[in-house]
Every structure is written in structure tokens, then in C-alpha cells.
Length: 91
Image 1 (cartoon, rainbow, N blue to C red):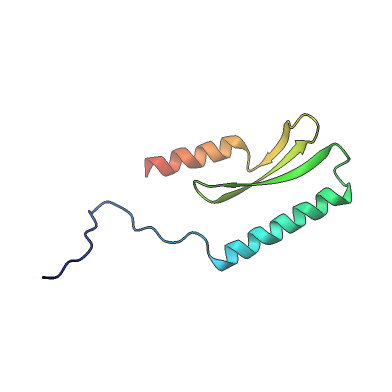
Image 2: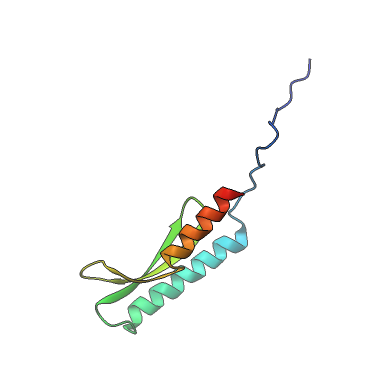
């Protein structure tokens, strides 16, 4: 008797999202953000923060006030993230 995996139709086959080049790019981005933060270019009160969205593995960069932790700028902006999420749910 032979047993094989059954995959119902309509379910996407998941491919690994973390390629070596993506990991290298993330490390380079983190390194660049640390360099900018230590340079003082943004002033003493502001810093760049790197965030990785675990749901879709999308990199987000934020300019944050160190004292208040208020997000002053985010790339990509929140509305773009929501739009992308909405579009992905419709397909």
C-alpha cells in the first residue's frame, strides 16, 4: 500500500520566503540604519527603527522620537500597508 500527501485544490503551495539574498539585504539595511542612528544626522532626539512584518516578511522603516516613541515617518506608510493587505485578501 502506498501513502502519499494529499493537497486539496485551491490551497497554495507555500514556498520559503527567506532567500539568502533577502537575508543579506535585511542585514545590510540594519547595518545602514545603525550607521545613520550613530551618526547624529537625525539629531539626538530621533532614530530610525527597522521592523519586519512577520505576516508578509515586509521591511518597514520608521523615524521615531526617542523620548516620546512617536512615529514621525514610516516607509512604506500605513495606508500603503493596509491597501496591500486588502488587495492580497481579494485574490
